Image (cartoon, rainbow over all chains, first blue to last red; front, top):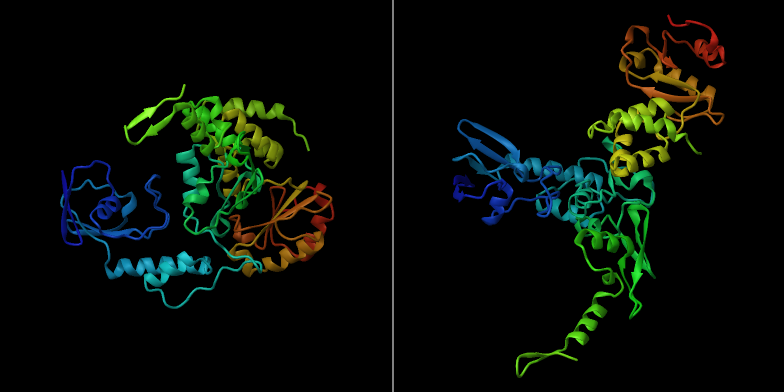
Length: 266
Length: 159
């Protein structure tokens, strides 16, 4: 059992490996984050989750997403003027990088960023920067999907996320988990016919067509990948979820609401 | 372009058991081909069962790795502070005008690759360039002219 105080409130926990961020949030104390996702390991890239931790004589600023709650009696402040200033500065940089992204603009105004002190990132006309380099897409691909189809490339000001050699990624299974976790909408997915295009990775994925109704429903290679990973039967890729349900219902019978029985078909 | 994968195999074998020696492996490949050919990277990734993305990430992170073929001769013009105040920008202009390429590019005939570097640690010799690993200090436009006009066969010109 570890007992700490957050913003003056005493909080006890006996969960091991819980981080300050998780504990604070579970107690209803809000800490802003950009690069945190509960399905992924802490990354500590955005630094928005900084908090002040006081233990004994020392106060230090740490990123709460990766700070384990282990020391008994520490006192944590989540919203001091110093922390507010740090978050404002971070948002100013993000705003200079991605001036067109609503989510960044909203967050900046929410944290009290008023004027633009920094010059905006210069890009060729008709292009805007949409990526904040939070790394969620890279991490979800590696940690959850287990594929590492994309990665950070180059460094410093040129750093970006890309598929190897900026061309069709052979490892990509077209699951679009990257699109799902992206907080800014920088990853765009288009579907037409039996093709799925994931634009920033220059990747084109072929979809499987349902043998019954003819709609395209799942990426070919992710189906095969999942089939192997989860040990699914070979038939599962032949029918779309709706048709599979239909077939199951027809073969298994119907539920009779009056007698509350399943009437099996012969 | 096809590359001889025979040499790659021996490099891979060298690092087969070391799962953390990707950088050393890439360095060896880079030393062999003088750049990192895409097909070699892809081949290595399959052989050592590491995602291409990870190797590509490394290859683009470090400036000593190049993904484009290099010219026959490498010209690195020092742009460090000491060289800068001693006129390195004018020396760079001279080199790029002479070869008609921008820094970081390779001439069409694949003879020269020009790059800028930030201090090579020989500030007393500035302005300075490194030509195929050899230092040429106290540069003048005339020296550059002579150097790039194929007088590279002559011995030690460094001063």
